[in-house]
Amino acid sequence: MDVYLPIANLSVNGLVIVLLGGVTGLLSGMFGVGGGFLTTPLLIFYGIPPTVAAASAATQVTGASVSGAIYQHKRGGIDFQIGAVMVAGGVIGTGIGALLFKLLTALGQIDVAISVLYVVVLGSVGVIMAREAIPELFSGRLAKLGKTPVKRRHHPLVANLPLRWRFYRSGLYISPLAPLLLGMAVGTLTMLMGIGGGFLLVPAMLYVLGMSANVVVGTSLFQILFTTIATTMMHALTTNAVDAVLAALLLLGSVSGAQIGARFASDVRPELLRFILAMLVLMIAIRMAVGLTYRPEEIFTVVPL
Amino acid sequence: MTRRGRLVLRISALLGIFACTTAQRDPILVPEVSQHEVVVRQGFTGADLLLYGAVLQPDGTRASESASYDVIVVLKGPSQPITLREKRRRLGMWINADSASFRSAPSFYALASSRPLDDITDEKTRAIYELGLDWLQLSPIGGIDQQQQDHFARGLVDKRVSSGLYRQDESGVTISQGVLYQARIPLPSSVITGNYTAETFALAKGRVVASATSDIVVAKRGFERSVEVYSQDDPVIYGLIAVILSVSMGWIAGRLFANG
Image (cartoon, rainbow over all chains, first blue to last red; front, side):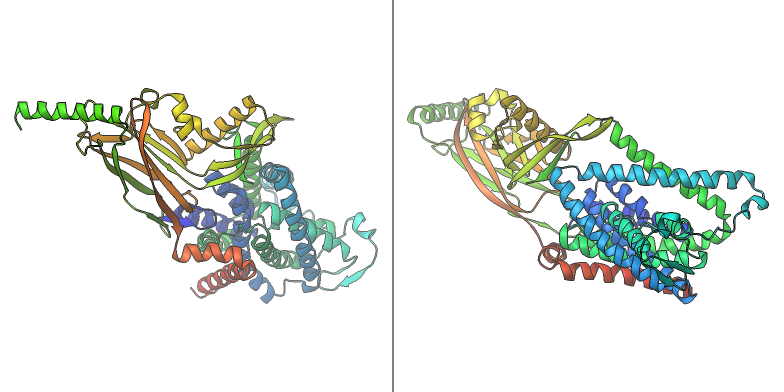
């Protein structure tokens, strides 16, 4: 099934794109991450221009996180107060991302920068995740699993920030600057990499902000939902790179995949899930690193003047 | 036709060429294109264009098989100013290093000829008429030296040849009975929209003796066109539509599966 993408300006096999969306949806359902970190690189490997890939993947992540966010809202899993601060940071972050995008494009290094970011961000997150997941997976002892019931203390750096607000649902009395900065950082990455950033947000909210665990997933979905919406708008306004047809194909796969994945997740041991996710993240990072260090097939790139 | 009749024809053909070369009269070239408009819309996977026509000697007779004209057809897409960047290994990574800019790089260039170009004509003629990938007039911007310029031009050609945007087929034109020629030129799905020109050249003894151009429009229509136009002219609405699309698809899927 050939589908012509009007913004990417080429025709692709529609089934491949739907399947790709399905796989990332499956992941997002299983692991509670948006799956953008998988979509963008796979689209680039498939031949979609990097900018279009990042922009359209962000649009897809929006759709993939909607039903999760609604579900979390129903069970009271969203701290709207801290969520709003983070979204505000996220919107500022997409603006910063757009400026960086312009700057790097002018320097002619945007594709290199995207690859380097992928290697650095996914590489470090993957290593941290693997280091936690592997002992868990192979020890198999319940005693070890239950050893840390999440020490609920925020990072000392956060405590040093001025101005303090009370966030009731998260059980925090901290400076709003901390969630704002976190939102900004993730927003910038969303704009540049087309990721939702769930796998960055969740650990950061737990271990840096010290939020109470029962609102972490919901609030991160809330933040992802609105930050990716802002990213779509920012891309539409600045890079004109949102391909609605590409996004629709990805969504078709990912929204159904997400539902199936959610069912899967309840049948599989969580430490196995975390291990698989860590391996996936590392694989993408390694693939990107290989792409950077080996002599590329295409030495030349053409950009319109 | 009797053997004598054929001989007469052949002689008259030879005389025709003689007349043409002595009296400097142009041969008659009648080019045609299978379609003057290529529509890019859903399901577009590229198109095959047929460039065909007839070449006759000035007196209206056909050239003999042995002394027929050489025919070269060139299909060119709109020219664009571009910057070409070259990756180099720095600090163990392949990053963009050198660059060169060209004012008029054709977005598409396909040449087909009846015989290898080297056999048909000399380099000077090829340079004048831009015949062949080695002779594209890219108009480099800024003062880069010739060697560097050639290096980048080759890079551009290699890149676009591998993506199907440039091609050179030196046996792509078939001439039947010394009169009718035809060439098939494939357009990949990644062609840009705009005005394309199809040029046809008839050559004899290494010189261009007749040429003609016709126009082909490659245009997006319908939904594909509205998407492109909308994304450029009304980015706010376009972005909102994309957001609504993704939110509603996610929401609907959630509802469907929750009930099912």
